[in-house]
Image: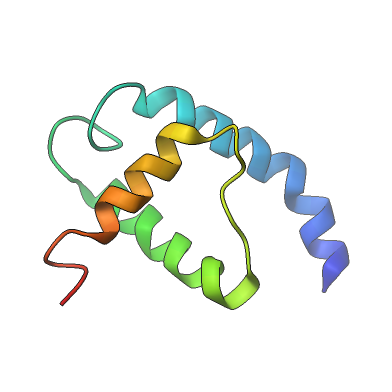
Length: 78
């Protein structure tokens, strides 16, 4: 349903901008160690990357680095 995606895009953009700002220079979303926030966002990203072909926007460099790092964690790449 492309109309739903189009309608939700401004909300998604706002959320990604907030997460990009919040992660700052931290390793994980909420600090120095992974939390349920990291696991939840990673699971969501894993579902929409291959399934819907969505990629984080270029402006989300910190989140892209976080995602790439999180993918390599032993608990993820089992």
